[in-house]
Amino acid sequence: MALLPILRYPDPKLHRVAAPVAAVDAGIRKLVADMAETMYEAPGIGLAATQVGALVRVIVIDVTEDKTGLRALINPEILERIGEQVCEEGCLSVPGIYEKVARAERVRVAALNTEGERFEFEAEGLLAVCVQHEIDHLDGKVFVDYLSPLKQGRIKAKLAKRARVTA
Ligand code: GNR
Ligand code: NI
Image (cartoon, rainbow, N blue to C red; front, side, top):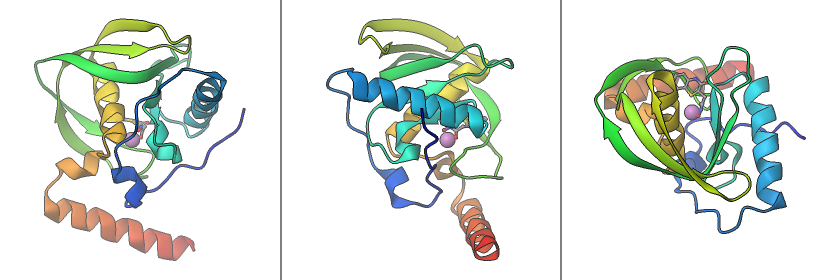
C-alpha cells in the first residue's frame, strides 16, 4: 500500500473527465487499496481517482465513524435521483473551505466492485452527498464550481495566498 499525493484546486487536472475502467485487474485493485489508505490518512469520507491524478472512474467512500464501511465503486453511475438536500461540503482538494451545496437527497447507484461484478445500491443523507461529490470529480467537477463566481474568486485568492505563505 502507498499514500498518494492529493491534487489541489485549481489544478487543471481536476477539471478533466476520467475514462471508464475497461478491465478490473490487479492494477485497479492496487489503485483502490492505495486510495483507501490515502482517504483514511487524510482523513476524508471519500476520494476519487482524479484527485490522485489517475483519470479513471474509480472512487472509494467510507462515511462510518469507525471506518468499517469501505466501499469501492468502479465506473459508478447514478440511475435515479430523488428529492433535495443542502449539505455543507468540504473537499480534500480544497482544504479548509466549507460551503453549502444542494444535491439529491437519495440516489440509486450502479457500479462494479473490485471483482468486476456489477451491483446496485440506494444511498441517502451523507452517503448520497458523498457519492454525488465523488462522481462529480470523475466528471471534472469540484464542489466550488457550484458556487457564485464571487465566492469562487475569493476561494482561489485564499488558496493562492495560503500557498505563498506555506512555501
Ligand atoms: O472528506 C470529505 N468530506 C466531505 C464532507 C461533505 C461533503 C463531501 C465530502 S467529500 C470529502 C473528501 C473528498 O474531497 N472527496 O472527494
Ligand atoms: Ni472532493
